[in-house]
Image 1 (cartoon, rainbow, N blue to C red):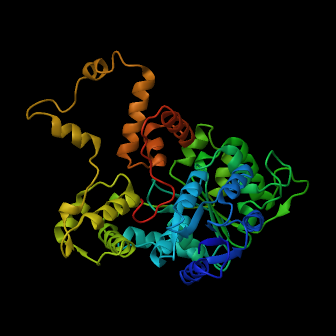
Image 2: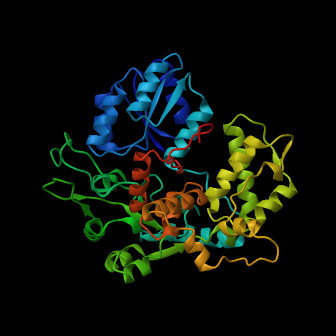
Image 3: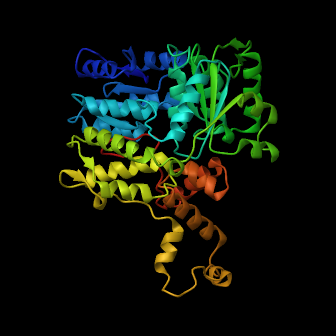
Length: 456
């Protein structure tokens, strides 16, 4: 269930948007102005904010940034308010929601903000066995470590566990540890008191307190810095958090789930992850197999995504032809379910006629297949090392590094986590590199963290 805060008057079309969001299952809260909305975010947090253009959206986003509150803001208004919408986007609003509101667009926004799916779509026996085990473990209170490659559906499985747990009536709160710099991540996790740092004009609750009585998912836990690992370990042991600048600990009652695409046991051996924290998190482990290892799920997921994106884009529901399904089954899916989702979204938009055929499906080609296609018949499939090196002579090291990073990112369909994994660097290092490239005017294609139909 997405937690939505609406800021602005509810008498008109914004009120209609609130009713749509409630009907779509969101937990909706309302504040009349930006200042009271900010106070609500400090106290309770939210997955998404919808703010009327009549409010000072720029000030709100500036305060959220200063107080280290990570929450996407959607500007809402009539299309006639084009200049105000542009100002809001420039100020940092993630998207613009035209009023009167479209129900499917709001549903897509809520889903994108929460990452919520109706449940793990599956048909493959391996996934069925994993879900049966997850449902059994959900009734316990022990921490669970969910592992799997990027894009396999770790957060979906975490939500499944929460739904089948005794905490299902409590909140489900997720935080991606790789998406935030260390200082912001610390504040997001543990909260802060007034005056804890420059910009902390009021106290706010962190994710642990926001998840009180429910479940907290720490995604990409392997990216957490050692200092925060030590602080997290204390929270798990003592079941209390110390807010930044706080004078006394705050008791918390939270079921902790963690997810990673890394081999944490190898990270422990290399000294990058605390052994005591690993054992605290890995009371029970669940490993999600990659999509290529559960082919029975590919047709089921493809049909689900085709139906979902058809509805989201106002297109008729169309079935996949047998040839299209056969093409999907032959692909190795290095990007897993996320890559399949993107492929079906494109296919829905490109398809013509009553069905979705193979001509509408555009798949990424693994680098080795590209190389093989360019090699003449009878030639060696592997260029000699000397040829590879000589092609780099005369180029600066930073240029070669940049091209390697950007090509890897393109190969991973803009998925930064997967690209960092292939390159053997941390996602923070990758993020810093991409920031440098943008500052140099280089076009960088990354998978957006907030996706909407039509503007994905």
